[in-house]
Length: 115
Image (cartoon, rainbow, N blue to C red; front, side):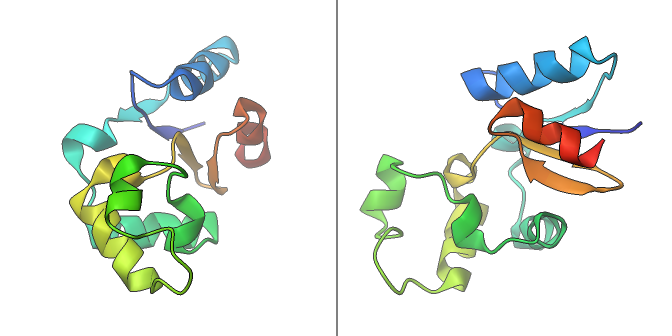
């Protein structure tokens, strides 16, 4: 099974998801989204796979998100998407992707839904 993991090596939840996959004998393709910085088109594709909108994958309580006013009521989804494309650290992680779909792997066992 091919799995892609949007991974942040400095994030405990992301490390746990990677270990979880490896414990299952799966070596995922690692997408270091903080370095590769997905653009709006890539994010839109992932949102489609997640069946989500930008606000659903916006990291909660991120200082940058607060500074940009992204947590206020009524912020347009397009504004959130543009902010995430410009600042990848606003994207909730880890994201696991297979041919069956995508999930935000919090908790790590959510990955089982797409295996």
